Image 1 (cartoon, rainbow, N blue to C red):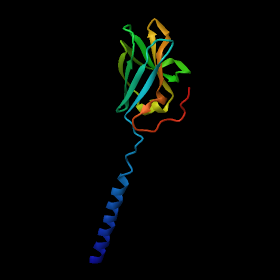
Image 2: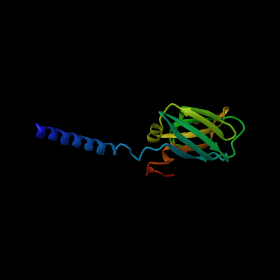
Image 3: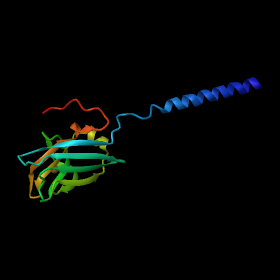
Image 4: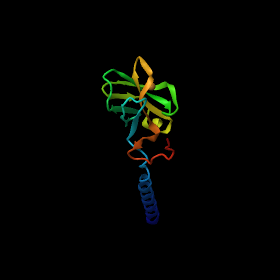
Length: 154
Ligand SMILES: [Cu+2]
């Protein structure tokens, strides 16, 4: 009887140790919380800056900060594609940029934005949407945690 109890105790101890060891692999370093995208000037606008994308649960907060932004409201969007080859249909609408500033929370995860092909662009004005004043590729953004992508070229 006594011998049997002892075997069970050892077996339980073994399970406990195994359980502890297994949990340490849970935290992966590829989980980054925010990404900064450089917004480059387009069409001689003189407007350039950054967009900071911060993960908020399953959503993403996009904060645009442009130098020399116009006081006229400037529409901004997340488009599919890259600045070099942009799908003209906006994928996610952002708050109009005014005096270089805009903050919007979009209903898409940061990981989805990073893994897909997306770019953020700012238009000259509501009446001149065709003229882009600034653009940045989300995929090329510098993430705070993950490794940078290799396919960066101009
Ligand atoms: Cu747009």
